[in-house]
Image (cartoon, rainbow, N blue to C red; front, side, top):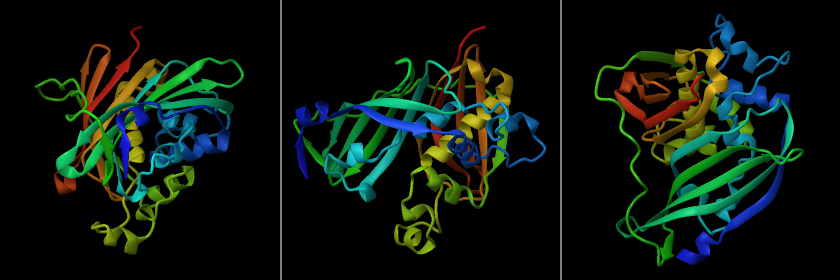
Length: 285
């Protein structure tokens, strides 16, 4: 399918209503590995009802709706998540009504791949107060999808991590059931649940959702900095490099530079980098 550059830049969905409750917040926590270590009490505030706190990357699923991209005529099976970024303005409540404004903000033609890179932006507001809670940016590669008049090139390169030894290493073992848990948040593609479908796509078995891996990395960063500092997290981003299989161990290398944190996440058993260009920013005290 061929669309025009202006068509895409005018594609938007404003004031889309969403809601969530504490059970969804807890389900998300379980979907990024919180509670998998039964002896780590620092994880409990994000997965127990009493005094429930919302883990910041919950923003990535609070208003998630793939139909915004599919309305452009993109085949979901040919849409590859390339990178995800988040900016938090105000903490989410344990349950709320939300309004989401989504639009396409960047388009890059990739003629040699017969594909297009698209970046969408979503602003999430509390429906009661109108206060903006978070802004999300999601970058994807749409195969067999071309955009007439789009510039060639690629999105801007992320700031490089320090060239020195890392300050922290956090290893998180993922649950063999993590993809089956995370799919209940909306990512129901069978590549995450059904071995035969995953093998047809060239994988050894079902793979984790990219945003689950991304959330695990944020879990690792917060664990390194301290769970008590989570309210200072303002930005979090990374690019996706390779899929992860449920049950694998994720090892996140972390560099701290004042209020900025840089990270990479690996599956060391396969010597495979799975998240790159990782960056988090914490508010200064």
